[in-house]
Length: 295
Length: 287
Image (cartoon, rainbow over all chains, first blue to last red; front, side):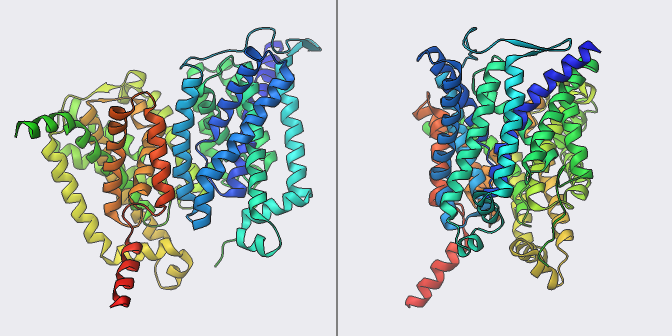
């Protein structure tokens, strides 16, 4: 029982990172209609920026994390403006943007490899909080608590932003039809910039936290996140941030428990079996609603 | 003459890979021509590849049985997959096909008796270069005939607007199902040819990088004409070779930049029938 509870907490913490990443990835997919292969590199670069801030600038944990998040946001805006904006102007659709995002993925991945000298770095001990809360008999380490709290805060905030605020309404409008949104008085350029930076920031947060808790600051961090975040988006549905968050946590827990109780080699198999069954049984995700097609 | 031979010795393998990639690109093009973005070609290639390698290595069958066998295997896999996939909307289908690649890799890893598991399998037979050329030529003739057939025209209509195509008496799902079947056959054939060119297959042979390569090749070459897929595969295979020779340290950065520039300059790809038509119309108008 003790072990089970501890593993569930571990799973939630890992899943929180997947969920955070998936929120950013899904936001871009739902609002901008881009399947962004470069999204994982935002997480890698955020982690690398956080690492450099801690090791070379001697910044404490919170400013370093903020710097990582800002790095993710800035990178997302740069990629969007260079790779996607020219295609948007020509109305090239999802396909062209996918290819330019692959191009940026190649560029940024190999730059991240150069920045870490092809090694996997880890944050030095003592540069991040290590306190432990005891919940009954179950210990809750600091980084896990921070990851889970971040996911809850970010999910609630972004869900509120999208469903209740004017900016959120504008984002949904642009996601539905950019021209119609423009006729309705929305400035799509601003909405696109806001969406890209928000998505980059959440993925950057996932990157910094993931880099610390998995002791892996390198380009492989983003790649792993991209695959798991992608799975979470498919299971949770890309048009609802709550779905991505819940699915991320669910995948994390399923992964940790199956590694503990079934076998380590089956860990990924269970993730993707879940993915497949959701695609077949509930293709629009956890919170997905049916939509109608133009006849 | 000797210079020509040297050149050939240096670039024969690059050209062989370009031809293999052309099969993958044609497979991706076959579904894209019906308006579907799908990465599933990699999964069909894995089916064709491992099936073909088993037929070659275990049963020792000759090539003229193995190659069609792999194509049929890929085609069967494609039909099976498309039953589920065609129920999904376009965005979901793209996501699902990516998921299919991830799942395929897990299946390959967990069935070592058939696939060699993590260690992979070595392939006893190498594909002769002339065979690759002959196959590509015959497949090209097939694609050319298809593109001017009733099916080709119907596919174009479905790609532009499935609802309008439906109202013209074309069944979009049937056209897309045929697209998937062609894609599966091409993917299966490409899969076994890749295995025979590499002379080694492992779970990593049929994974995400191949998927991105083939999509990039099709879009780069031009996704509105079948020759675009072949040109794109050639460019996309040659580009890394050139970049490695010119700027070895930052090879991938240079690759990415080149891809980015071409896509921003020519979003419809290198081969663009619409641009030809516009140019011809302008010339006629000036006359």
